[in-house]
Image (cartoon, rainbow, N blue to C red; front, top):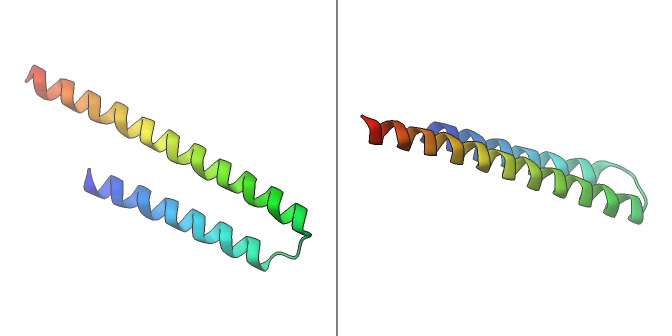
Length: 69
C-alpha cells in the first residue's frame, strides 16, 4: 500500500512540476497562459480525485476481505 501511495504522490508531483515548467517555457499571451493553467489545474484535480476514489474502493475491498477471514 505504501508503494502505491508513494507512486501516486510521485506521479502527481511530476505532473505538477511538468505543467509548471511547460507553462513557464511556453510563449503565450496572458489570457492564454491563464486559461491553460486553469485547464491543467482542473485536470490534475480530476486525476487526484479519481486516484483517491480508486484507492478508497481498493481499501474497502481489502477491509471486507479481512473481516470475512
